[in-house]
Image (cartoon, rainbow, N blue to C red; front, side, top):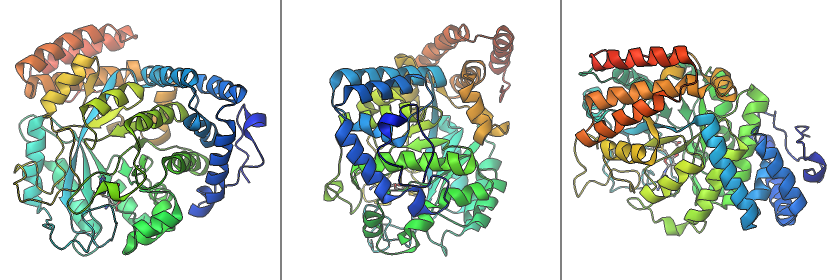
Length: 489
Ligand code: SAM
């Protein structure tokens, strides 16, 4: 059915691809038989040095890999070949994204939910979890607390509940968040992680000025999906899987994919996730803006060991490196579900965005979660403050960025991809990162972070290739020292 062939086609193509990347039907663009054929092909070729070399040579062109090619590498346990892949992942990351790391925080608005997801403590049958929904005044207080840490970019999170969390509530909340101007603080980009919804609602979200629409697939395996979501609107596999198509139809061109690793076999999820990315590119002309890599965690009445597909840290890191190589233009997000050590490795292999100082309970930024509060969605592994996270990033040589310029300049969807593909990051995103870091250092940093950050800015200015851009960046940095804010390229 599909004719998107690769340079290694004569080797890779064992029979036709058994899916239709352009179809708008979930079971055709994530065809189970294609995923299974991919896994079989990966097993058959994982030790074939000629195939491995062909795939790695293609990956080195920096234009990505198909799900079949990337799956062969995932199955491969040849250490020498894999080292080449890890080195390449680092190189691609450096080439396309530079050393910036974008920071964000999740903001949980409501944990009311009518679904029955077996891995999530918000499930409807959980009668002892405290249910909370923030009022607009409570949202104001949460956002001020987040602004006072230095955050500029949020991802709002809600359970699915048409009565308690209707779209109007989401839209009012977005407006409240954007309207809050407290000291020098501002939330400049609100990403949204809400349940699959209608084209009309996606249009409303677009009009409300959202950044990325994020929706995790949880699992691409239809049978497992239906078992894991036994009740509620989320049970509908096709409606959930086709959500990004509706979002795009509603005008949202920055969408964020992800699977919840641990629920199903990671090999199945990995192949299907890349097929989903291929589908968005084939059907809408623009791939996913981001891919998130959450792993299932312990939570109120959830024991992650109940799912027998947990993956080791090493395999998790391999997946991150392979996503980086397979879709070089897609940002990658890791949350505080992971601890410092895993996050550190993941940063080098391809992650471009991380959350910092996250609270996963409703209202958790204003009030430190009391002992008896069980409204959190999952246990957080990285509990450092935002300043500690920034200090750590700077020490590791990464430039922490609070930049939101692309979305505010209308560089979304394929316009952002063009910037990335033309490797203009160093003349655009890099200086923007330095400007937003400088704002953070002036307004929120500890003494130590400020000293390290200012030294970093001086060093990093030298790396801006375009002299004119460098000069303007220096002028803006001076303006920030003099109290002005919000400059961008
Ligand atoms: N309610 C929305 C939906 O249905 O897609 C999304 C919001 S939910 C707050 C965000 C994500 O948290 C879910 O999509 C799921 O992947 C993840 N999540 C749920 N339970 C989790 C757990 N126990 N550990 C880690 N992540 C979890």
